[in-house]
Every structure is written in structure tokens, then in C-alpha cells.
Amino acid sequence: MEKKKRDVEKDYPKKQFIEKLRRLADSLEDDTRFRIQVAGERVSVPHDATISIEHERSENEEEIEFQLKWKL
Image 1 (cartoon, rainbow, N blue to C red):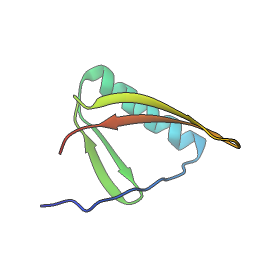
Image 2 (cartoon, rainbow, N blue to C red; image 1 turned 60 degrees about the vertical axis):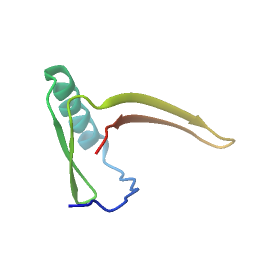
Image 3 (cartoon, helix red, strand yellow; image 1 turned 90 degrees about the vertical axis):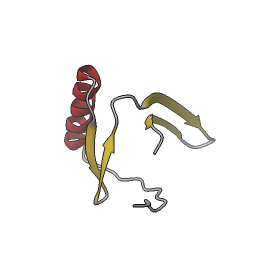
């Protein structure tokens, strides 16, 4: 089954964001697959995904992204 292209950004209340980060950290420590639902779609991140942190700056804002990437 081919997956459709997707580019979504979803805001979460701080408490939910913290819970998701804790679950991610636990999965990374346990070397297990991380499962999350983002904007109505379930995503399963393999244990060997590449992990990076991106920092962007423009004239009026800054952004940090914690990224997990993997091949399909």
C-alpha cells in the first residue's frame, strides 16, 4: 500500500507534548519502535531511525525541531 505525501504541523498543549517526549525517550532507551498519532494518522517509527536536531533562525523567529527519519 503506497502512502500519500504529507506535511503537517500539529500544536499540542505542553502537558501532552511532555508525555509524548517521555514516551519517545523510553522507546529510544529501550531500542523499541515508537508509535504516535499525529493529526489523525498513526505513525510507527522504527528503532533504528536517524535522530537529529535542527535549528532555524529568521529575522523574527527561531525554531528547533527534533527529527526522526527513516526509509520506507
